Image (cartoon, rainbow, N blue to C red; front, side, top):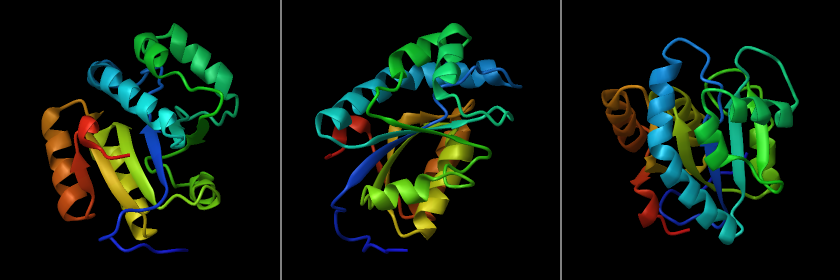
Length: 187
């Protein structure tokens, strides 16, 4: 697998949106839904900026312990469920990429690594929920693959603010991720 120098700006960037489309039908789902709703408008603006610059937008979502492959049916259920307001703001466009993941990391048992290779992506902008689980573990897997990582700090959340605080510490100090508010990202 290719490696990159952490000191140079990567030539190809992608926006990764983790678990923002959800039915929020799990323990503590209402708490996480409220946190996701707070970041959804900011994330929608970042996604719009990325699309305007032809930066690939990649959605990676939990399967809710169901192995399914019908992305449209999943998005429709989200648009009708508890997360409808979030899904309406962040509904994937036809040119966006979408895949399901069975566990926390977006790399685990998904075609994400191959997609990034095909797109020549060297730099990931991470966003979504939950900051201390899926975002953190995805960043860890990206780090070991030699990808540059930027975390849009106003586009990640967890059920508890302290969980996000702890995650950002590890993201910055353990995984050498850049932490930036979305409006300060140079895309």
